[in-house]
Amino acid sequence: MTSYHYLIIGNGAAGLSAAEIIRRRDAFGRITIITNEPYLFYSRPGIAYYITNQISERQLFSRSHSFYREHRIDLRFATVRSLDLEGQLAFLDDGEPLAFDVLLLATGASAIRPPFLGGDLEGVVTFDTLDDAKRIIKYSRKAKAAVVVGGGITAMELAEGIRHHGTRTHLLQRGDRIWPRLFNEWESTIVENQIRHHGIDIHYNEEIAEILGARGRVAGVRLKSGRVIKCQAVAVAIGVRPNLQLVQKLPIQQDKGVVVNQFMQATIPTLFAAGDVAQVYDRWTSQHNLDVLWPSAINEGRAAGYSMVDVAHGCEPRYRYQKASPFNCALFFGLHLTVVGRVNGSPGEDVEQLSYLSRGSSHVWTAPFSPSYRSAWDKDGTSSLRIVMSDGRIVGAVLLGNQELADPLRRFIEQEVDLSNYQTSLMAGGTKLPQTILRAWRDWHQHW
Ligand SMILES: Cc1cc2nc3c(=O)[nH]c(=O)nc-3n(C[C@H](O)[C@H](O)[C@H](O)COP(=O)(O)OP(=O)(O)OC[C@H]3O[C@@H](n4cnc5c(N)ncnc54)[C@H](O)[C@@H]3O)c2cc1C
Image 1 (cartoon, rainbow, N blue to C red):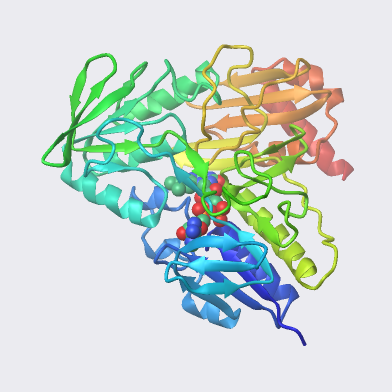
Image 2 (image 1 turned 120 degrees about the vertical axis):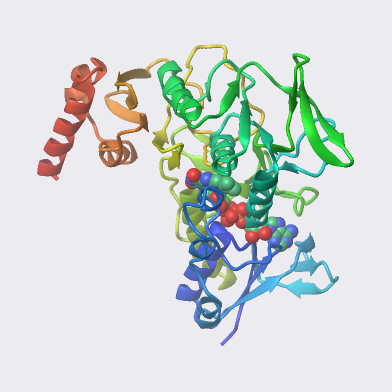
């Protein structure tokens, strides 16, 4: 019996999910996972709750050493420095070549480094890993004041985490409201109120010109407006970029990430990519898009695992991956947020196009609307519900606060349920909107 070698670079959601499927489908294969982090698999989104003390370090880990042993997964703590795809070799930091039959690139994405002067001072942090989380806690405990830069979920999680430790926290926003690419004005206001309620100072239309230092440490920031804020820590969350360093010079199709087909295969058949590093076809935009989402990484990793076994055994891959509608549920400042599908907060408005995707989000969310898209919404003081419809179907939803309708809306969107009969009532918005969604949901359940 031939034993094939499956090599996986990355021990995150995509890499581990692939390994689990491979072991299920090939009892004899050799599986190696390589990670340059000194940890077993942990929940990366969970580190946002770790810095606010909502969960302990131990709760981040859902796989023990015995899991790797029982699944006969050889986990190696090393960095892959280069690849020879033709020779099917990976070179580790000690120079050791590792031969493989099929390779999965599951290297994730990394935060954009601070692009301003002073970005390398002690006290400047980005937020990718558990080690970053530990640094953030350390700096927060020492600092009297901190500045957080960025407009997405990670920036808000950072502001909440730092504030939790009693540090005076300033949140800088380049625009004039919170996350305008995603939220409409009312949604931005709900989030803003919640942020202020937690004692955080928000500064709109402000950007860092320079991080000021003293003896190699952060001492403050000078803003482009000329204003200076004294602080001892700066947290930067201005977007992420897929970790493509290993393949950048290799002859495979790449755009923002590694472009893969429906089998998660790159343009070289023995190379697969999944998770934050992969650019995957999605039917919602008819484009290859990036997601920086945990559920997407798991599903793509699993899909890659199926195809890797087929290809290792000399067969055509059979398992076609169909990307689900990208979604995220998050909790920040005590506020629940669910985003599903296409929800662009400012269609038609001249809102700045971001160069980089923020964590916990998808390109699909903010893709430009087609003219047939219509939205409707309902709101009260602390909650809001917005849907986007096209051709009698709901194609996107944002729920802030009350999450009662999150599940029905996800199902309607994912299964492209025809709601033409309810459209007039849905589009009326206001209190009719949640009532009609519930009615449609009950009717749909009875029917199916
Ligand atoms: C603070 C934070 C909050 C988040 N919040 C959410 C959220 O609310 N909802 C959501 O859906 N998603 C969220 N995400 C995003 C989610 O965690 C990622 O989409 C997901 O972890 C991607 O999984 P992955 O396997 O592709 O990559 P990763 O989990 O990043 O794993 C990549 C792995 O590759 C390894 N690696 C990279 N290069 C090399 C190399 N050369 N050699 C060896 N090893 C290498 C790394 O060490 C790492 O183990 C959040 C992420 C962060 C950091």
